[in-house]
Image 1 (tube, one colour):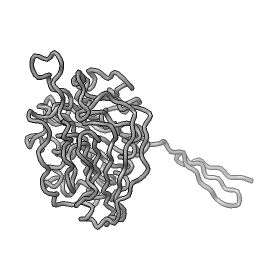
Image 2 (cartoon, rainbow, N blue to C red):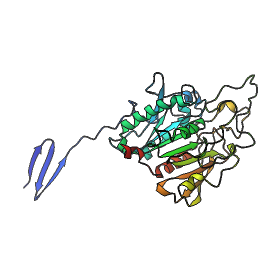
Image 3 (cartoon, rainbow, N blue to C red):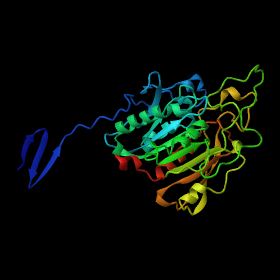
Image 4 (cartoon, rainbow, N blue to C red):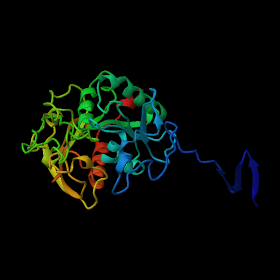
Length: 353
């Protein structure tokens, strides 16, 4: 004989023993920066022909008047869910949406539970004048996610965005927050490879009476970046990726791996992508230059990871074969980079909160 009683929406049943079940309403997904989460992601490039979309600066109004940015995050993000946060910086002359589709980590935010912030520089070139703005955007994101919910925080940047990430990674603000730095053809920590002697910068274009307008990844006048500075003085994991044709040769050694007592440089299985990346420098293809970059295409990448690094650090290089500086990253290369980031030690933000 059963006894049923309704108490505050819960049904309590007794059949020799008491069992309880209470209907609850699932929590609404978290919305970050007031930006609705949609699939496909807002302003995502199609497989080909992205066009003017790459000059978009994003739907999120930032903390400074007239400055906007992108934020990509899991559409089913739960309150107090643990996530990895990445700030991704574009290169010289570029835009947030070019960077976002060059390194399309947004394609993996649901699968790997990451939050990606992609800001814009109003001058299309990062400088110390932007540092306070970047710090405010990061603070706002960390506070919305909940600092104790940040498994790891990474800086990533292409070209001058990578150089900027390296410049700020050990600054007073970032040094106790950044768990890792991903350099996307923006300089290697631990020993910089030389430039390809055959030519790194874009070729003069046929029919151009004057130098062609800067493209979304064009460098400052004078060519490529200056020689890399000494290794930074703070603690973080480091992943470097580059195109084969933009460097002379990938170094076999890394002083950053030595710093963490890594044991062996292991060549892992090559990454083979049958699908091209989304973007490339469309304005510099007449003629094209291998070092600068040709149209996006499928490809192969060689992966080198140092084993046995202490403190859970990751040190790795990925060389994209037959690629230059500006071809957008292919899907499997992008996913491998994301997985490497997630495999590294994190927790600086959470431990400081």
